[in-house]
Image: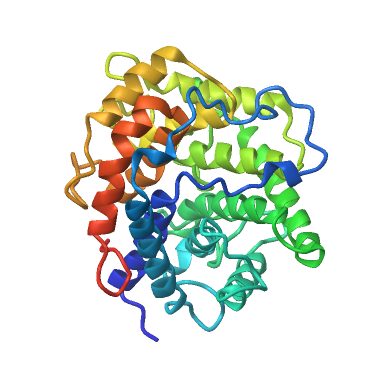
Length: 368
């Protein structure tokens, strides 16, 4: 099968759209997670300020959302390759396959059972096969001499944390045999990411301490909010699954996130060394990270929440500027609005869900 860039992007887009539409579905059954570590920040449950009202859309609209998600999952299932992965650039796996797995989990599908049991079994086997002894997940050999933004040295930090996040979400929802395979994979990922967080930071980028960036060092800056947000989601998932995340890890990461907040507009920098980049996705990521870490900040809620509400996702696939990655923004903003709850969720979700249901293709996919 010859993979086209359009198919690869459509797979990624469709998985992201399903996850965005299902932002209100908690993936982790926290009550089933034993032995939570005694950490202060990440030990707390998500810091909902006001619980989201799920009645903001009618039963008829919920049925339309569910049908759209089911069509998307059916389309995704038909794209799976013989090795269990989902199509993307080789450097984009197993991250993209992990996102696809999470989209099935968000609808309640699990490996080994139901209509997608074998699909998820094969996908999970592929993801686990991609982990290197040091904990990194990659389907492509990493070359530090390859400076391309599509290289494994660039993308493997995403692959690793997205795979780790997926495994953390799945850990308490699967049988003992699968959990025994997943447990060491999560621990190796945590250990590697702790080492990466402790890397030596150049003095001119001292404010990057506590965050993460690519496996390949660059001279531009040494942390960014996009990479760091995935790390925090992974840590949240690992803590929920009963793994130990030292307090100082969470503290350093959250302080880095807060340093990226731009108070004049309520937006978040991709990096405060690139003050011209304040994309919509990073506003959602910043708010989500704080809430997942049990942090509540009234100023950030009011300013960032209000700014995100002013940036409509209608019509489907409309970028607001050159740095606005529409589906990446949808993924983060939908989750942050769910965490903010109250009037933010009530004003956001009805239009957002209608846009995404209306933007779906007849075959169940969404356009990249």
